[in-house]
Image (cartoon, rainbow, N blue to C red; front, side, top):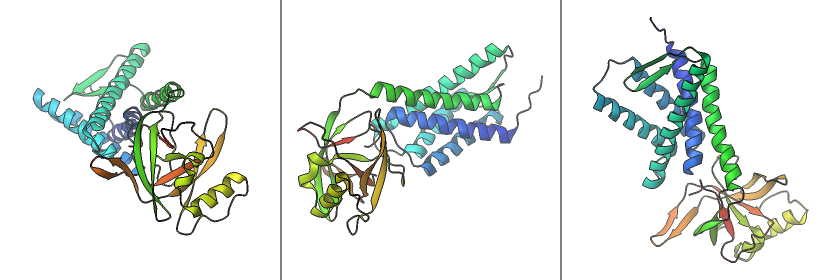
Length: 289
């Protein structure tokens, strides 16, 4: 029996499935990627499926191809910040791929039309493309829901020192990891550092304090301090959805024994509530570092 595989459908389905799986792997590994990088990595994921049409390669070459393309796809999406986080992202990307394959096989068995074609460790499953995309999106959605449910009551841990620059002033803060913190800058889509204004007030420059005093006092100022770009950061909690005031900053760094290590982060948000701890004044999410 001959099988007809439409190249355009194959590439599109693998592109979208790769996009969803990379989103899920990023959430599990605590990695954030900008949209252009995710799209580029998804293109690589789609191109990697073309090995299905190649002549059968020696088994060691097949293994090396799979490992190499998987590592390249994850690198294209999230970069190589640290070896531990990179390997974690590779692990979760591979795991979600296996989960998707298992769900697709289950759908085939339930439908009673078992058909699988393999070549060079690439698998072609006879399932409707929309079903395969729904399963890929379901994997990503399951990861998102699990992290939100399991991380909702997690206590902040792992304090670090961070340095940022506001209004020409260097501000040093202590930050704690909060797995339920998922704030992102709507302009850059990058994670945001959440600072408690009452806890950090004395460390901020006076123009910033005056602006935040007016904001939290109910008289929303029209313009931010000169030289600062205002950011309105969406924040959704179990009680309400609101917009937090924040500022774009070109410098946010991690304070380490080797000095200041700059982070690829561009904004900081402020909360009117105190975090109730003397050990930290800010919170960061698992994808911030």
